[in-house]
Length: 322
Image: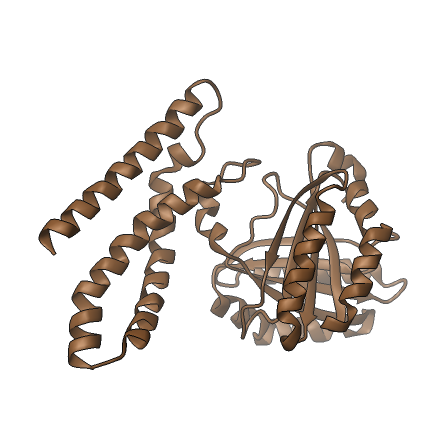
């Protein structure tokens, strides 16, 4: 990663993973909101995303901050404003933060369902041995089921002392299977003679991963479009599940309370929605990322009209026949 690469249109992201004391989670969320307001004014800032913990796999808070260039990211990392904010957050945290800078893909960071950020401190003079070992690991993990991507970032002098690797997998189970595999453990033992410190932290992503394949490079999907497609799938799932399962089975047969029935219904609804939204997003790719030009506005309107019509049809059918 270099300023030259950034100058060619490649943005960079600061990935911060931090462990927050459970009793201070609300305080940290407020602190992060205030920090978000502050960073907006910094030159080169593009966007920020906050991923709360998702136990048991992801126990850390993960903050992704994108900048137009490495120089802009470094300016924020070394700023007096950031140092002041960090000092204020210290009582809320456990242990040290992991802060890494990575070069984005052409469309920016698009997290897979689950990623592992692995940082390694290499012994001085052993960099060549480590790079040879890393190539061996990269080749081995290409055979791991569910691997969706792998990124390797060398240290950035004056900013980041560690080598950083980011693995993206389709499911938590596949990621854990690779992390705990005998093959990977044997490879880690081989690296012991030339590494000083090694650890991995895991991050799960949010709804945006449902639309990953439909996103055009360099163009984040509009939130209102994603929301419309989620509702298009969520509404019939919730309605039909309530009519055919929730009321007759959970309520009448099992006698479960409304609170319990609703909770079980939400589990099913979220799971089915997460499965169906990627499919419907693929069908509406023409609308999610229309071709640039004068016809784009027409496409936006046409797609929204189609979905609104589908809403109306579903409401009418459910109202008249159920």
